[in-house]
Image (tube, rainbow, N blue to C red; front, side, top):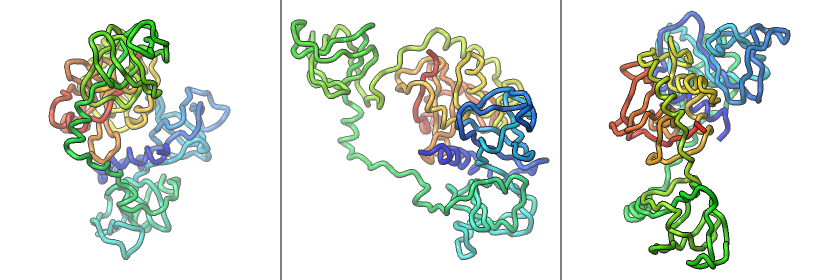
Amino acid sequence: MGMRKVLTRIFLAVASITILSTATAFAAASGSINDEGVNIRSGASTSADVIGTAGKGTELVLHGRDGDWYQVTFNGSNEAYVSADYLDVTRAEGTVEGSDINVRTGSSTKSDIIKTVNDGDVITVIGKLDGWYQLAYNDGNAYISQDYLKGDMLTYLPSVSETTQQSTQTEQKEELPKAEEEQKEEETYGVVIADSNLRVRSSASTNGEVLENLDSGEIFDVLESGTDWLKIETAKGTTGYVSTEYVSLRRGQKPSSNQIAPAPSGEGLEVIEYAQRFLGTPYVWAGTDLENGVDCSGYVYAVMQHFGVSLNRSSASMTANGVEIGKEDLAPGDLVFFDSDKNGSISHVGIYMGENKYIHASSGKAASVIISDLTDSYSAGTYVTARRVLA
């Protein structure tokens, strides 16, 4: 999936909840860095001081445009600038001008009407198409005529092709027959627990030929179990035998990765201790200020940055950081991810604390940094994956 598509889906998830809001002094907008090592400067000029760099896919809140430069928020400062050549606007807000203005399913007056909006309403826009704006609503299948929406940043949005409900929805996985699904959940697999390479041999004996060496944490399929030896198949397709002394057998759904991430260092507990200092910090969309306001990914981003861990900025893009781990292997300091809108994309992230607890910036009723339980109905129903980002 392309970065633009990922970011679009992120904003669809956020904005589908709060498409209309009170107008602010300027139309809120966001953009994505499109290259690696892009300089962020103190002014709208190449002669201005470089105050930091941002990598490809980094999301920044935009405050306006000054010539060929965007004014952005960076590391808590609103007086930061990035060249327009290196930033693509992905989201902007516009204000409705007129009464009973139709929002439609397509970019045509013949398209079905979804709802009507009125003068002063603020709408989140993600693209423009032939005199229409595409809205971050209804999975992107929502459009409004450009004649009725105004905003300084709207002109910089990308041109898009019309989406359809079929093309924007996540493809549904083919449902497995019940018996097959139960079998998948009950499969047995093994994990190497030896500190160094584990030899896979041609026979159940130390005299057998060494066919392959497995690293610590590597996962394999179990074909036959024995007291001293296991017949296995490795991720590379090698069939052979390994000593039971150096492996751990597990039941359940085998992880999608070929190796279990090593346990994190004691730094995980330090991360949790630090993260709890900011319980109650208000939820602020796109915020990264641990004292004054954060969103879910901004909170995780800022906490981990304190420990020298560099992460992507959005919850969805953070799944590219670190190493994937199974839910049963979670340890303090691991990142946990959720599809809070149940639309097939990652839209929330928190930090695992241990004992099924995680700390996160919630946009719900609490609207602040809180501690939740992975076993509650919301968390269990929306949990997707986890990543280990601490060495």
